[in-house]
Image (cartoon, rainbow, N blue to C red; front, side, top):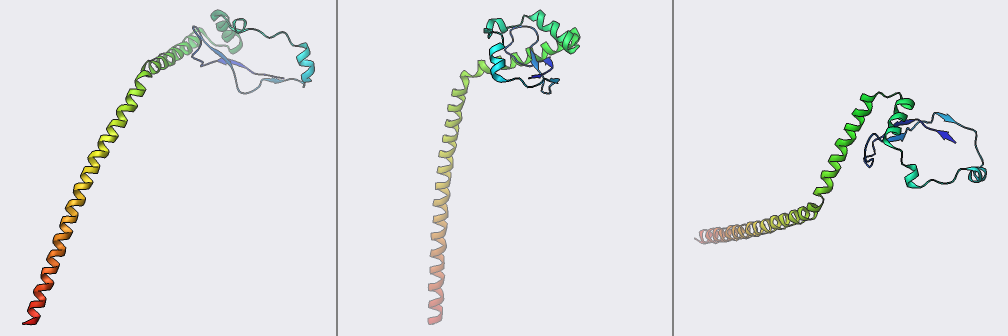
Length: 150
């Protein structure tokens, strides 16, 4: 069993007040306990409602366990509220995602059609130029052949 420090969290699902979380580095490591013994002796599982910690209790935990001041807690709540607002805007804009994807697809299709037509015209011009060049070469060859006959 390991004990981890309690810290100010960043979970935006908290309805109000500061979220709390556990840190990454264990504070204390206890002697191993047999799993079967633990399961037999542990308290009954709590419901989701029982696990919810009221705002004032979370603030008190942060003050006592983390030594945080009220100003630090308020700054953490402001940062969290900013993130909540950002996520809310993102969710509100989510309905436009499909429309934007379709619009982008239409733009690409139009661009491909224009490019395809441009490439087709370029190919026609190139073919025409090659035919004219071949025709000129034939005329030159015929002119040289006539000169040599004279």
